[in-house]
Structure formats: structure tokens, C-alpha cells
Length: 113
Image (cartoon, rainbow, N blue to C red; front, side, top):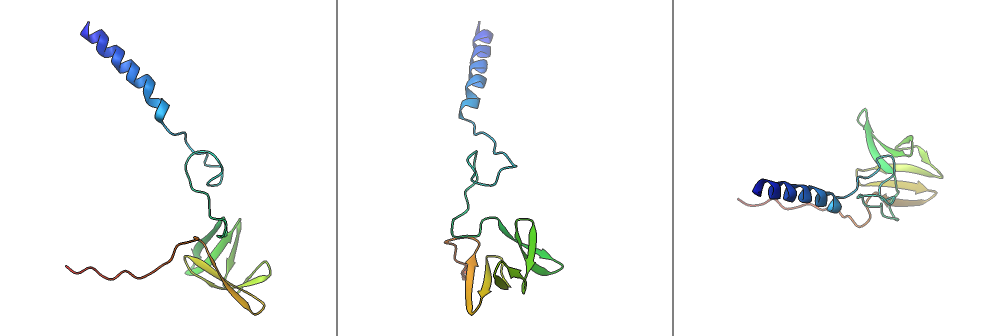
């Protein structure tokens, strides 16, 4: 009798477990497109832009194209590429376009032993 109760409790536990599980995100969809986890990119950041280093030179990947410093991205020339931002010059105007909105880099003082 106790084996039957134990088997019933085990079956009941296994039947209830998947109810609280998260569904898996579709890897073919961009982040934040509705299903599963993954935060949506901030509206002020260039969604889908990535920094890629090729032969020691930084490039910005926009869609399927790579742009290096000095190349034109639309009507703006890429002046500088960092790991967190791109500097674009359009005419006389130079503007910084951050990849991550609201993130500020700063130095952290070393800890004392």
C-alpha cells in the first residue's frame, strides 16, 4: 500500500512540474519580440548594432554589413568606434550614439587588502 501511495505521489508531482516552467524562446526571432525571456533593446540605442573586431580593427555590424572608421553610415561618417558607442559626424555636427541607453562607464578604485 505504501508503494502505491509513493508511486501516486510521484506521478502527481511529475504532472504538476511543467505548469510553472517557462517556455523556450524562439532563436530565430530578435530579442524582445514577444516570446520567452530576453529584454527588448532600448529605443534610443541603435537596435541590432554590434561591434566586431576584424584583424585588430573595430567595425560596426549593422544588419549584414560591416562599417569601419572613416566609412559612411547613411549620411554620417563614422569617426570613432568604442565597445559601448559610435561617434558619427554629419556635416559639422559630431554626435555620440550609445549602444546601451542609461549605462555609464566609470573607473572603480582598487580595493585595499
